[in-house]
Image 1: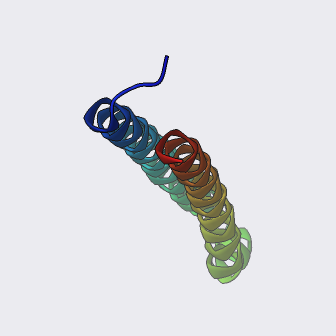
Image 2: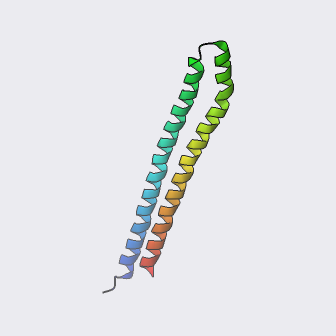
Image 3: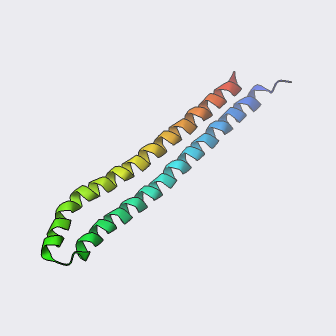
Length: 103
């Protein structure tokens, strides 16, 4: 038994919609994780500066802070890049499944 064209089109559209929703969730979750990672990383750098007891240690911590924050930013970007790739993979798979239904 073959399905009617409108039913198949609905099924294909549903597959695409679910893939888009899953991709959106992946990206939203990654943004939350990235924001938290940045916030915690920057706070740790700032705490290191504040915790330095003598002026020399404080100066060294301040000098190292930009590089440390840059590393935090790299980690954040990696989180976002990986999420974008996962989301793209989900969308590609959804499109492939949807296209199969329409054939």
